[in-house]
Image 1 (tube, one colour):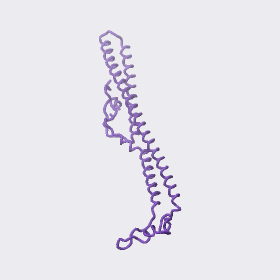
Image 2 (cartoon, one colour):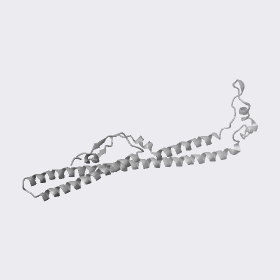
Image 3 (tube, one colour):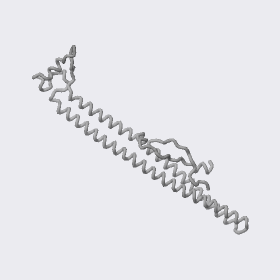
Image 4 (spheres, helix red, strand yellow):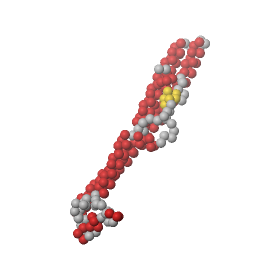
Length: 214
């Protein structure tokens, strides 16, 4: 692999939407838990309603429906035709309250998970910025040392300095190029962390780092 390819790092495009974070497995999980909790509340609330037929033939009210409003049915307890008699309302209410509390806990968990997703994404973006800045600094240093090596070789060929100066310039340039490659590696690691924080990657093209040429 050539040095140029070692220095190629993908660019992060501007305008990536925050809804990309919804792809994260932990966000999907708490969303599913929140939806399930809401469904459980709806199911618990339906127990408040008697289960019976409202209509009879020709669109008239059914006998069971009419009996709800008769004196013997004041306790909403006319028999097996009702899903729950009045004596069970407290239990139903307790069940609704319990499911509501579970949903509130699911909401808290959802909010905390979303906050974590945004915080991890921000941390990853900061790491991406700082590693790219370090890469740019190393690229600039390597470029200057490359120019210094050319000058040392020119001075040597002109007889103004010894070959030891050329060797020293080569050593410094090689060290700078090595650090530049390591800096490019750190940028790739930061991109991996960013993709993980965002729940996946994005469409990108690899581009050489600015001022990457030695």
